[in-house]
Every structure is written in structure tokens, then in C-alpha cells.
Length: 49
Image (cartoon, rainbow, N blue to C red; front, side, top):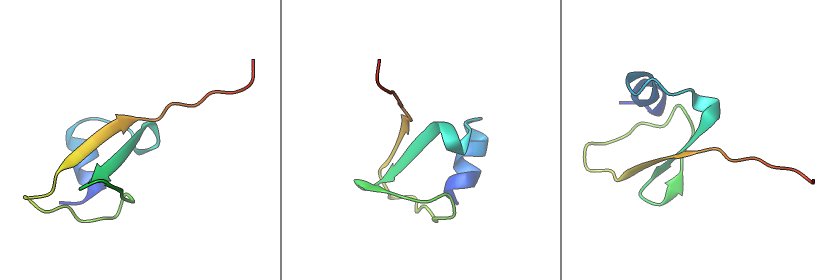
């Protein structure tokens, strides 16, 4: 399954999250394996006050 397909199933927008596979940030077209450890983290941005 691709990262894009996984995020679609989770109803998450690609630009709103980071996907990490086995400790490494992966692009949307990456293929995920059943034994991969996947983390989905929100993108947090900020700026000067």
C-alpha cells in the first residue's frame, strides 16, 4: 500500500501530516510493507511573534 492510499483510508490530507516509516520520513509515493512501523505526525508550523 502507498502512503497516499493509507492517508486516504485514514481521511488525512498529505500536506497536514508527516509519515515516518521505520524512523525515516517517506514521500507520498512510497510503498509500505505489512511489517513496517509507521508513524503519522501532524505538521506543526510557526513563525516569529
